[in-house]
Image 1 (tube, rainbow, N blue to C red):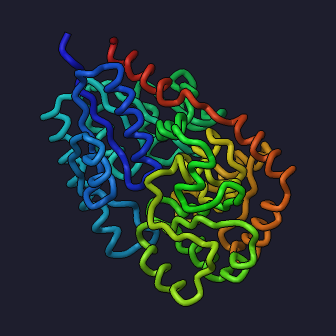
Image 2 (image 1 turned 45 degrees about the vertical axis):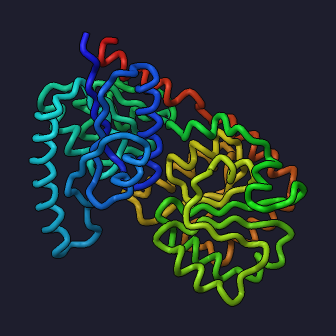
Length: 367
């Protein structure tokens, strides 16, 4: 039997890219000779991260749907048409045995093109509320791997498999102790740490909340690791140059997330599906601040799924300037509450997600 050819499409943010790379890694482990091609969006971070991980990638000229009517709407439909044409060409030339969509701009055109040529297809739906594209595709793909219960609201029940979201494999086996992680950041073993994550690109409102609360940070009896995201790093460094608290460490991007999670006593984060899956796996107490700038407000729905099980604190984006840091300081000082949140969020972890998704992929490949 010839080695299978597999297309993995999607990206746009680390929340889509890292799960896709985890799936690819598991596929390579089980099928060492398989041929994997990634398809992403031109100009997005997958075009850099995927080749760095050792996989080929090709890009589509696709963009996100504009939030307001205008000239961007015209551009969107032109780019979508071009992407559909290019997606058909990629499917025809690569001739895959399986197409996997992980979400992101490129996922829709590639899966549509694959389905049109009768290629078996699998969707990995990360969120608790499915987006429009996946709802439509869900009627036509062969398998839908989900991370939350109750997804029959959006997809045919017979196609759904509850697997969870893939996470970076080094989070499962970090290969270091908490003391080593603290030392890696230059902290001493007895210090407590608050980790602030704005996602791979960054979060303007979260970063501004830090700027407005520098005096609160300065007085806090713990260290703060602040990941600003690539879009805001230079600006945040400049704006804190004169009055940066000594207990605050600024990072553009955290390449060693396993070290950051090991060091952290608590996390402040957006509520992207990938990040939530990681927080569940590492069992970290969290304050979640859903982004208001995502399709169909799915981050709020993700955060509510945890809030309803007392597994995280939810603070709305419009309230963070006033509420976020008082809540964070109070929670860091309440060890009993931290332990309770940690226990509850860990119960929601699905650590076998990557293996479960690849199990379904292999069934579709008949291997």
